[in-house]
Length: 298
Length: 298
Image (cartoon, rainbow over all chains, first blue to last red; front, side, top):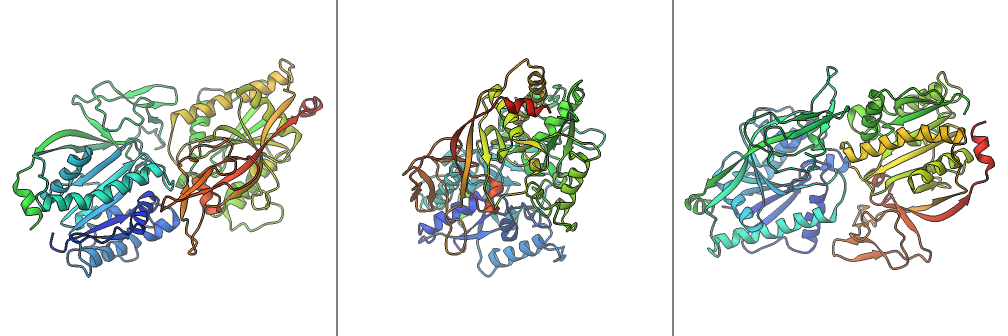
């Protein structure tokens, strides 16, 4: 925490519009400036937001590993990723220490946190929010097919993922949930800094194990959908024999693994193009050394 | 009913995918051929369906008034409208008498019927479905801004509109509702033809009165959303003083008209680009002369 600035990014995916409304509402109420920690607000993908689509050329939230090696500035999202890092990165013109990327999902994820890898500062922030609100944490790691997330371009950063809500649909409930996170986050960090509260000793995470596609026919088309019993059951454990999909004849395809798993992003609309029907996680309890709290403020 | 064929169109809007699944499931179960009345199935906008967007160049379901006068075949949807009428129109190569256009909405409309204008044959079909299932009917008429609907290109035709469901999201409940309509429609028509049932003497419709936009600021941007008390309240009456919108400061904008109205398509995502936050209707009871049933089968 050198600059004391937190970057709040909304609409990194252009059709996730509720966070933009929340941020505008928060700003309008005159809450931007705080003595200790300042928020900077930015729309991640303004062109896609204007058009109401997820992205223009390429998923912006998979474009941040390409900045260094890829100078293909014909791709709008590469240009945008460059811009965001050059402006708000730790060495940027308006440097921020932390990036909070606000997303919505069509899946029934509730209010949740997504972490990328096991960075100590991320654990510190995630633990703070989990302790305050009881939020589940999805720890995404070791997935070669999914890389280049926005928050990874900052030394500390989390995604706040809230659903279910349709793309491009304003939902007052979802807007309020983002407002709660935005208004609490800075307060909580300040309390921790002023030793008004302690970091919890452990954090519970759901660690990414892989993703599965919809069953498909020989023509490549989806031929079975999320099973009615699996719909909206994000974060709920599955064991061998539990239903996953149902085809047009009413036949069930069940989970056949040995281990209990916790599926997330069940039926997320935006992941169909990534051939993901749901992702599997397993639960893990992580002990937090007290040291990481001190490191957070250095 | 000369040819005894009914055209069932799904995905006239490419991101309304549940009807396509219902139709495929129905076909797979071997239900296509019936001795008396045959179904023809077609995807309205296959290119938009493939891309998961509402349309390519222009809303297909506003393109059917342009066929005669507009030969601008650079517009995909004009070409597609021409194709559909040339193939399945009453003078087409595979003529159909009736068009049933299956749509989904993000609004909480339930299972409903949309009629365009006051054609006797449409009343006959709508009355049949209302009598069987108790479905509400939205009668769209006298709206110069909204013309050129698909079903108007056939001598008889209705839209079946089911929601709420997100664009591009498969929902088993919605799929089942379409299946019920598809499997019942032909049966009901046959019963009527064989005098196994009578047409009801009256039909209740909600007649289109106009549409209202979201409140907007000087910059043209939406600055108030559907009021939480108005969300999901489609078909429920409003009277003077009832809340419609809420802005970022929490201020309510209320309905200020004298007459009781029934709003529909409240907050429909696809209508934002048409500057429609909701449409107003008023209730009307229409008597059906027994004659129209006989005319239906001539």
